[in-house]
Image (cartoon, rainbow, N blue to C red; front, side, top):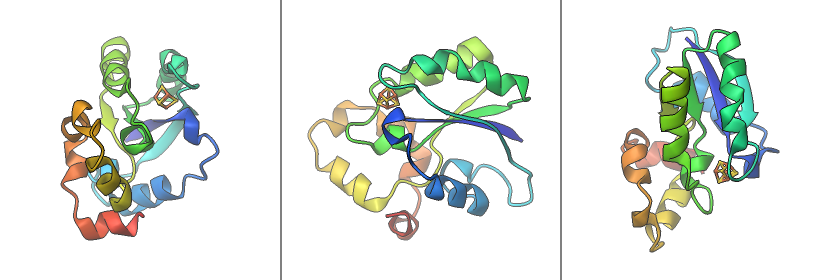
Length: 146
Ligand code: SF4
C-alpha cells in the first residue's frame, strides 16, 4: 500500500511522532491496514496554508510515486479550529485524482476531543461524521496519544 500524507500547514514544524507511531502500530487512520501489510509513504506535504492551495498540486507528486490512497492528518480534524475545508479537500482529491482519501492519521488525543466537544462550534462541523472511525477508538488509546 502506497500512501501520501497531507498535514495542516499550521503544524508544518511537527516532528511527526504521533503519525509515525500510529502507522507502526496500526492505530487511527492506519488501523485499516493489516499489521503484516507493507505501507509505504510515497509523499508528504502540508496543505500550504489556508485556504489549502497545495492540495491542488501535491497529489500529482504522490501519484507519480504510485500512491494508492491519501491521508489527511488528524491535525485537520482536531486543530484549533478544525480545518473548515477538510470535506472539500476529500471530495476534490477523490474526484480529481481518483484515489480514496482517508480522514486521519494518528488517533485523536483524548484531551483534544474532550476540549472540542465542550465548544459550541464543534457540532457545526461534521467532524464526528467525517472521522467517525477515529471517534470510536478506545479512550485508553486516545489518552495514550495525549
Ligand atoms: S486549517 Fe485547513 S486550510 Fe488552513 S492551514 Fe490547516 S489544513 Fe490548511
